Length: 434
Image (tube, rainbow, N blue to C red; front, side, top):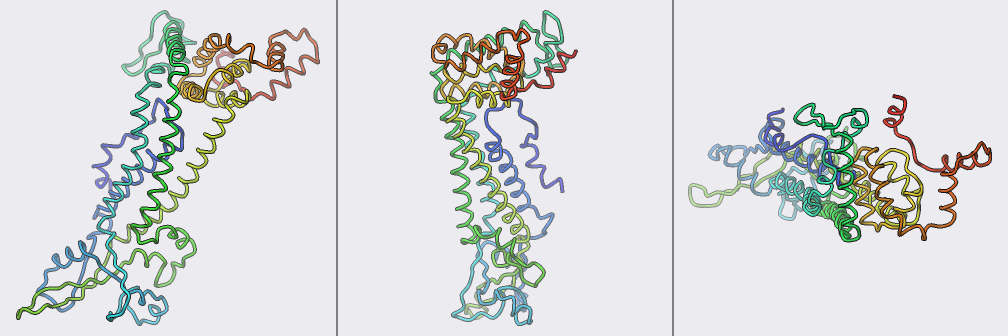
């Protein structure tokens, strides 16, 4: 079984990505769907599970070699008779297989030619699902990686007191607190340098996310055309179908036995027609692949629409709600974030800069990001003090003043703490207890 995947396994790197530059829905397209389609391609082209893709017999025609009729019927269209796709006739024994029986001149024939293109179509779909990620990675050009490289394990720097970096292995180096401070300052300077200049970062990401959605709709439509308009209702037929009888709903789309006409010249020069009966072993795998893809595309469509809804909410609320900013950044980087810092972020950053800062938060350890955020807020605070509302300033000042044992003031502070969505992460708690 594993030999079938040797050609693909060397090209797939099943390892976690250290740097995140997109969301979960994006990964569903270029990682999960891409791998699923490649695996389906390998299964379709493998003979280990289904043997020969097609085997045909012509009855009393020993002059036609078996491999000739097999090759001819595989590369040309086979067909079934529509009036013989009748389960009642099949149960009575009037026909041997669904769609197989006597052929008359006026009988409607249903031709099947898709099976020879299935591996090419699946591989092409895999490439199409990967293209938006390739485009986004080219546009992003490793900006996030260059800024946060080496700062993913800096929590140990708060526990190792040394002046120089400590290297445990060629791939593991714990940086000193001085090195971390320098790197944080570099990120701060680069972020401020590109502030309001790199405004195309978020639109390009959203455009690539829209490409994923457009590609999904296109692929669903294309597969429906590829299967003669029977893909859209495939999953419904599978759910409602009865698989205990001699004929199941998938036999109409993926027939296991078909007919094929082979013509050749006879001994006297006249044209002879040979009626071949072909066993389509390949369709045993095709029906399972496309039934699974129907359900997967439904899940992928739901995830993509949910991602668009969430992206729209972030675009609307990032400049309107301090609590929303606190919730988002505490999810990206667990830890306690000051409401005043979130108010400054809300007032100063456009959506592209806000989203860029969010992905920086996702790729940094919580202590490092809080240090970066504090330094950024100091730089941005001068332009925002006069724009902050009196209620926000009163809340900030109330938090900063000591309570002096006043139970009313302590109750107000406790109520604001309960309403805020900031939480102290487990790492920070452990560090304090230590």
